[in-house]
Length: 214
Image 1 (tube, rainbow, N blue to C red):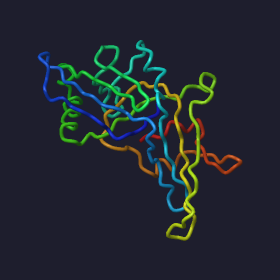
Image 2 (cartoon, helix red, strand yellow):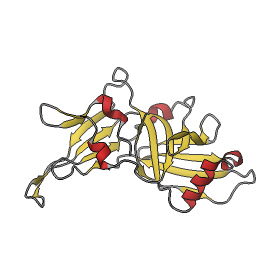
Image 3 (cartoon, rainbow, N blue to C red):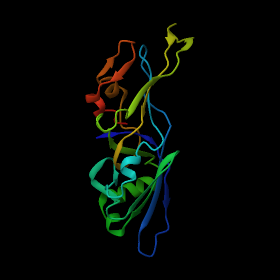
Image 4 (tube, rainbow, N blue to C red):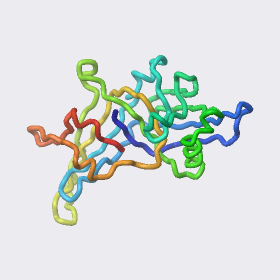
């Protein structure tokens, strides 16, 4: 399972319905580059983005159960499509959701913590949990491109390299998680297995895609 990160855009409706339900809305933007690594002193920056409707395959299949979790913890569910408490809508600009947090779920420790964190402005991220489909099913589920190099020198007099950009074109979405902030450290990203191509472009091995935990 892979995860990605984007700044959260949440609206917590404080007014509870007569049923006692709480409503949570959010969105995961497409075509918004996330910096995975600055590249350090000598390396190249690495960025990632999701193409519009990258999650369409599972989102458009209502029989696929997608859940809203706290911190990618399957033991801390807030809502799900199977229970009719999670509604997803895919668009060119973003994947949006509306979740109903029922009174029963609100009584759990993880829901209390999550709602308190949202109200306090401490939970500010939305992170999708997904897998990349096999190549036999989707021959081009992702692509690697390069930004042009910046001709100006850095503080050491070295040319500044353009970023390597990974664009995810198709992914199987299984869950969305509320997170406090980016969960990776640059050391973790730098430790992943990247392989140079004959042209010198550095790309991640398919086996290393477990990574990119943001």
